[in-house]
Amino acid sequence: MIALVRPDGEGDDLLRAYGHAVRDGAARARGGALASVATLHELLRLPLPAWPASPIDELLRDTHERTPPVLKAALAALALRAAALGELDETTEKSEPNDPNAARLVALAVTLLLCVGGATTDAWLTLPSSGSGKSASHADLSLGGTFAALAREARAAERGLLAARDCIDTDQQRVRDSLGRAAYSALDVLALLGDKIVITVPETARALGLTPPTAGAAVARLVELGIAREVTGKARSRAFAYEGIVRALEPGSAGKQ
Image 1 (cartoon, rainbow, N blue to C red):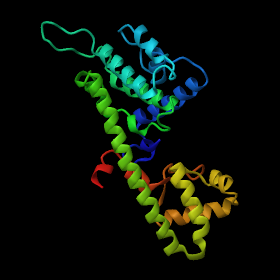
Image 2 (image 1 turned 90 degrees about the horizontal axis):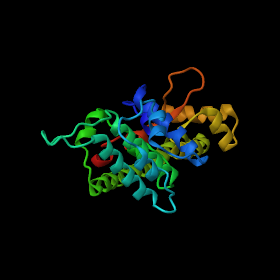
Image 3 (image 1 turned 60 degrees about the horizontal axis):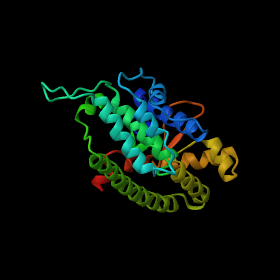
Image 4 (image 1 turned 180 degrees about the horizontal axis):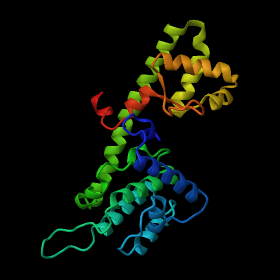
């Protein structure tokens, strides 16, 4: 998860819980488990909602063959938001969310449906924003608004991936110019890092057929060049993130390119 290795996301309990929920939910869905509103609440360790969930459950359980995953995600987001806002108060003409965590549920449902449906392979685009409980009362409840949000995420993803590709090309040249003969193993590790975003020395050694000392030395060279960054702060079981790609994919960064 990109957000878990960003400098502003390290140690964030909400993002970490969200990441675990995405992984657990996707594993259950691919194993044949049926999605439901209760499952979404369970995955995020939230109490069950006060509003009826059966119509939304039917939509969540609909097959991707019948409803394409992007359309299903948009419809699910629309239904969850509408349910969370509750009935309109005719006196004030305003509505308050029955579930203060509605935006987190909407984001998780959309993420799971897109991931399991094969529309995306990662979840960093739909992480909940800060103050997500408040944002539920201001959500655009139109289907057009939901699709517009998905379109904005798609455009941001395209810009971020283009920036990431430029970053990889630049770093490959930096490795060649800086390391000489030692560049061969470092370039192999850089390619793996560009694919995985976060790596460890043991998995790098296995993936590239290198000895652990050779893999560790190559990773260390990338750290010295400022390309990789250790993100665990531990002496053992350390993990290294691709610093440039992490920055390129931070929210708002792609638009500044």
